[in-house]
Amino acid sequence: MWKKGLVALAALGLASSVAAKDYREQTEVQAFIDEMVSKHSLDRDYVSATMGEATYQQSIIDAISRPAEKRLAWYEYRRIFMDSKRINNGKAFLQKHAATFDRAEKAFGVSRYVVAAIIGVETRYGTYTGKYRVLDALATLGFDYEPRAKFFRGQLEELFLLTKEQNFDITELLGSYAGAMGYGQFIPSSYRHYAIDFDGDHIVDILNNPVDAIGSVANYLAEHGWQRGAPIVVPAVVSADLDESILNDSLTPKRTVAELAELGFGHEAKGVNDDMQATAVRLRVKHGEEYWLGLKNFYAITRYNRSRLYAMAVYQLSRELGDQ
Ligand SMILES: [Ca+2]
Image (cartoon, rainbow, N blue to C red; front, top):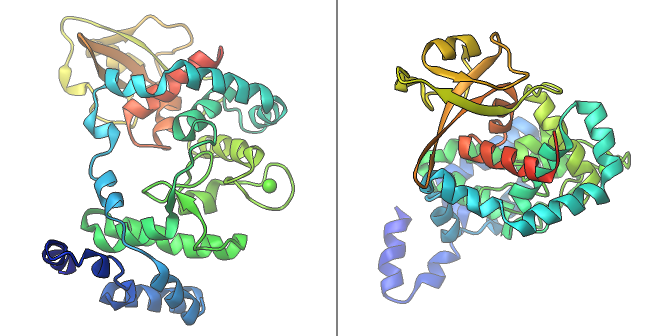
């Protein structure tokens, strides 16, 4: 209800007093505080004081309402990530951390070029990791963005646990408008479950430590089904009798390569076998369409960001960074 009040008060020039609203006055926030205390034995005064510091940010609501993956066609989206600066900086990043990439490839089987490409797409190799307080982002989306409130309240819960486990100051962590942190932009639940200490200092730091960040992104992909040495995505060859209902019907590879070929969606790539699981991808280019056969490693990249545009950008940037 207070949003209506915000509009009215903004018109009267009183928006600043509303912007400073105290989240603790919301019934749902009180319930959240109770849950953190009863479920995780967190200190009530600490949780309450923290929620008292959380600040609503309208720009976060604006940002989540228009994600690039939904607004842009492939050829527009691609341009954002395939610039020469991002490619050159990626090569430098690979070179600087060559020993770490060696270890990560051995340990997890994930191509160094894909790991570097993800970090390049996410944060330009750790140089743009986000300017929002993660606490503000998750409170704003958890309590003032109904479509995904449940998810982001869950992430706020994970943030309380993460900061306790890692001894971080919850009010100081910065990230994206969606609460993603560090080189690889892990949301709190991913941080807790997939981030690792890869340099052996007993701290899991993907915010400031590129070694932990590289190991963590490789571990994330390995945990989401990455197959060592297997293809990611290959150009498809489409026949006249193509069954168009299969195009972009699922990120999950639920048909075999042979089944897709029967439906008019074939390929001529080496290293792709008939019994592999795959999905039929259609992308809009400036003058027409492109067709790609996405394999299990393509799917693994979509576990990072559930978008075929995202996965294709990562794949193509990885190819620019080096041979697979
Ligand atoms: Ca570490």
